[in-house]
Length: 485
Ligand code: GLN
Image (cartoon, rainbow, N blue to C red; front, side):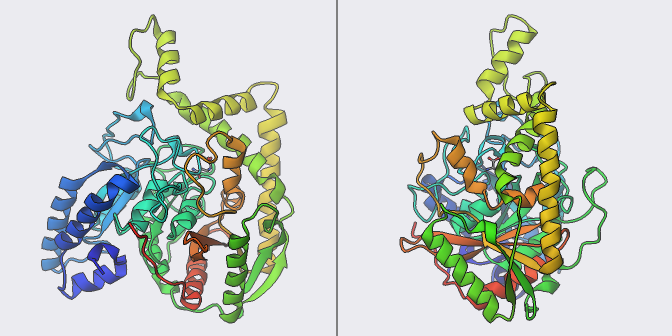
């Protein structure tokens, strides 16, 4: 196996033993990018030179015996994280030339832990989408089948890990944007509890839902990245001053005697039969590992998508009001006056889907409609949260499919927003409730597309989620394949 195909912990063992260097690892990743990127197109911006420099610095640190949590490991960032001096587009024309003057907190933390940043990955515009097709910079392709989407909105980050174009990456998840692409690309993706990871320097989509999380090749790497990015940040008012456990300590602990909730509302018509079969098999695996599966009910599940598509666009319409062409980003030319500039800038700067969300959100918040839509949605959201509280009184964690289908064809759902929105039918509820969720590979379809299983737990139970996912991974023994690129 080439170095780029290894995990963080495997590479760390090699670095510590002096069997390889960060320069070699980084060169292996860059070589892989050169070989496959024209097909996959996971990146918007490659950071080749700085990555090579950072690798050299990591090797000097290792020689001095200074090895930190990610020293010398190549990591990619969704292009939604502000990176000092490096263009940050959020997949949009309106930010195509935006160069932030600062690093977001997670970027600072990765750098402080010694990581090598490989570049900024492709995404749906402003993280609105489930396929990475709404990006201004073109479509990313699924490494397992180049005619298919990688999922979204963090499709570039998921595809980059699956294609070995980085060792791990970060994404953001507002309604499923980490877990769904992780499932469709055959990697591990975790959305932490709302408030667990600081969002300072994350370009906002829907502020009551957005969370940052890792994409990795296995559960152990997920724990390693969670150790680095979690924690309170005084610069971010929704980050929670709750202690961060050592997530690695939860690996390999077993799940004997755990009660696992299987929500009956999640096995619906329209779920792909191969996905359903893989999930049923995952249930058998956790039972063999000593857990007991019980049926639970999340009675307001039917309303999740509707509630999300009021709350998320409402918050987006407010967050995106700042893109007016005045201080940064794209500005239209030949403007008659200020109002004309606003109009032309926003008309030309935003894509179709973003405009659709701004219109829905502005309508839902407008006077006379606020009570009927936003307030009502917030009330139903409280019921959805309560469903989980009641379910977690009876079980330690919940098991569901991550996505109702494997990766679909490029273009298949672009003309049908409702069909696209239904891609997140199993992931949205965790964002509405603020709870953590992880997607772990659980098999392949007959045609070789990856399938993911989702585990959910109560607030700040990421450790238990990692414990469960690690036990599942050990017992399921899903065959490790590599996409044939
Ligand atoms: N697909 C959902 C949407 O389009 C979720 C996106 C996300 O989690 N950022 O809004």
